[in-house]
Image (tube, rainbow over all chains, first blue to last red):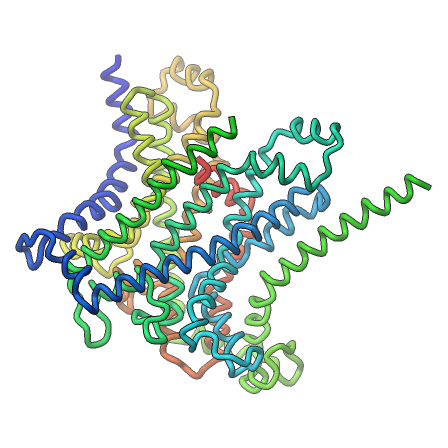
Length: 288
Length: 281
């Protein structure tokens, strides 16, 4: 009986497992494996030593990493409060039948491709049209924050919807009890609702972290594989692309690319692990 | 009197909420609106008054005509459709089967498999790209629709499985037992309960379609050839050539965005359910 159940389980799960293991897990593990090779010869940590000690390579890696941190910090610090505010408005019970109307409209930017988003905003802020008089994308100082804001504009819908669902799932008797006790809407929101949805706020933060550190599209769509001005918008994703695919006169190197991917993978893994071990555990505990 | 005042307060608060939401709606849709109105204008109209609505003098369909006539436009549209539908169909099928297996035959192993898929949701698969290219070269399917479909199923099947597991859990055992007593085998039983999880299927389909249609990375790397190019990549290259045909460019962008905006507007409920149930675990 137990054996039959096991066989049925494997039968039903094998197509999904096959796709997942073959096209997601295997390439990742194999990438780590080939990062220890150069032209089919085992070289140990040589690729990593190059990435971290070669003057140009290490500078690129460090700047790409710092740009990712900047991207994440700007995106998270604007996206989360704004999305929370929007979700709070939608669940305030004051828009009633219009709720789904607003929710759908507010989500539309998220359904666009980065190519469209990049183009729309580049056009709007282009000096050609004269709405903005400053070359936001052309200056080193403003280029990355500008692209980050474009990305925030596009993806705001995801945390909004996510927090909206979280707020809706709060049992209404808790809120009613607080109302009976005479608590104001604002007080209920900050003292009861936010602590209750803290785990979801945490999850969406860590997802933003993973997505931004794995990000590539918006930068490539706007600035190509060698993101200017003077690498000011280069992130780990574009650096990875350049390392294995090459760009312009630079030839790509698969094994160095694999080593770059491995470094990025460990940054993401470390960030996620630290987060789950410290913050998320405390959030879950306080909820009980 | 007191009641009247209270009512007024209530209404003004409602108004404030509506106005705040309206502000966000304008912020979200304004830029899109600008692109749409300019796609219906003549070149002169686009540059002399980018924020003006098209009038009898500046209104034209020329951009749309030229965008569609552009060598690859229709083919790219077809490519994107094939790839998106193929990946979605396969993801949904595999997810349903696996989720049924996981909920129906609970053992230690089933919990391990479910755990594996939960981790899979967050896996940054793009970092395995170099090996994916090598695999596709080895299978002789680089520059084919199949290569993209296979990768997308690998990426999105974990989310699909986890979403479907929550859906299959809600089905009572009675129906399944009744089917088995009637002599249905396990696969037949699966088919009998499948209609009950259709809302979940719609959620998985919606949440798979969006990133597949809009993806830039894998089309750039696996199917950059002119015959298999997707719409998103085609538009990217169109933009990237610094083409001066702004009319065709704007019209092309509008046309490429329409299918997903339509789909999302229709299936927004399923999509939102998929998003919050899938990542919220």
